[in-house]
Image (cartoon, rainbow, N blue to C red; front, side):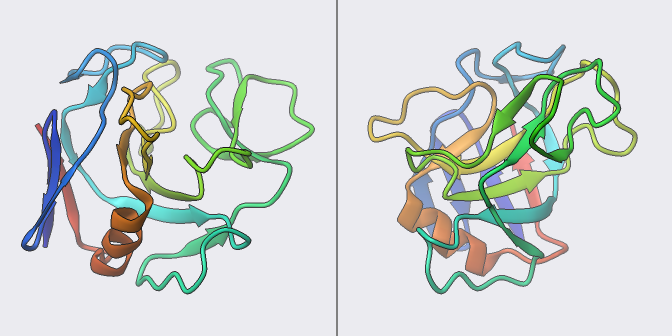
Amino acid sequence: MHIFINKKYLTYDNNKVKCAIGKKGIGKKQKEGDQITPKGIFRVKKILYRKDKVKGLKSKIKKIPIKKGMGWCDDPLSKDYNKLIYYPFKYGSENLYKKNNIYDIILVLNFNMQPIKKAKGSAIFIHVAKNNFQPTEGCIAIKKIELKKLVNFIKDKTKIIIN
């Protein structure tokens, strides 16, 4: 099973849904903060979600409820670079417990994970799109209702192909 992503759509099974990608498009990710969605083949490592905002989420992939005090390290100076962290945390990071809904469901892609290369890029997620599909910092974003369907579809061996 494959999920295909290009500059406008995420496609899987017989579904084609509009998506947002990084502000600078899809390409070879050079460094942290370059706003590029990385080209390549990936897998979903885990799913993070807001239990208080998303009910009945079913998946064959490991799910972790997002709680206050959870974040994702995007600071190359930290030994926890490109990993889930908990606050208080003295390095740069992205708070995962947000008021807006973009992180109600997060599919964590295995970009720059084995091994982790410092400053190569972190936190490449598939998450909920903003209402007008504003470009992301490098993630892929789709409507929440579509993301819930996608979560149900993916399995351990599902390949995410970004080109």
